[in-house]
Image (tube, rainbow, N blue to C red; front, side, top):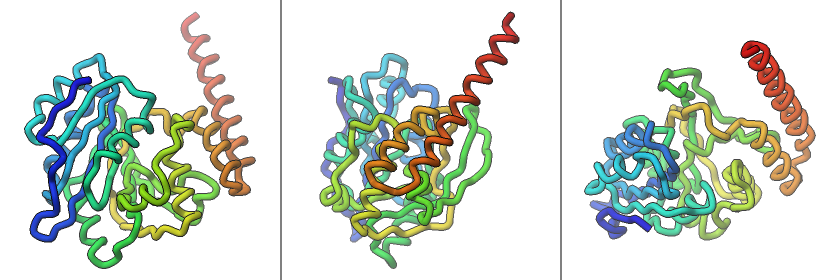
Amino acid sequence: MLKGGIGLHKKSESGLPLVSIITVVFNGAKHIDQTINSVLTQSYKNIEYIIIDGGSTDNTIEVIKQYESKIDYWQSERDNGIYFAMNKGISLAKGELIGILNADDYYLPDTIAKIIEADKLNHADIYYGDMQYISEGGELLSAAKPDISKMNEMPAIFHPTCFVRKSVYDKAGMFDTQYKISSDYDFLLRCLKQNFSFHYIPDVLTCFRLGGMSGSCASNIEGYKIMKVHQTGHHREVIIRGIKCYVKTFIKKVINLGRTK
């Protein structure tokens, strides 16, 4: 296992809450520089930054080492997937609030400052906000607003925008690693069912890069399983979405096959 950083010894400074940010990555050299910079250049400074790498074979580790003196802790070893890595990061985190930022995404400069301002007034268990979609090349696309009232129908709160109080993980548990794509949806549904308090911040908090597994056909299958477990009553809609996804994918493959002939 490779590991480095200056150690997990930060505490709240001058009465300011410590916020832990966890980045999980595997072969993310293409975009992780932007991700890291978005954390290190936050206007709010009392941040503990943890990077959990899954044993990357590209240049990810070289990029991380460029920032080693500013990262509180990082490690690289093979693991059992993204949610296993997130759980590892949460176990290490010392902050009162924890944000999880994947290596394709980035925060806006005042994201954490907005969380802290909201926390002064609300002291909620979970904060969440709007999400800006970006293309693979970084072009700004549409911004999406969450709708907590639709969580039984779909993942209507965007996990990349969420900041969760560490005590919530202690009480509700961490991510269920049986789910490989949508365990964050399962986690948020658990928190809703256990009546943890949610507070919406009406601003874009995170820029989310399209092209990953979220929204894929496989994610619809997991969404169906999660809805069934939580008895939301809406898993049939997910079946329909999954069928449409597979049909759309099949048509694309047929069209592309025709073009190559």
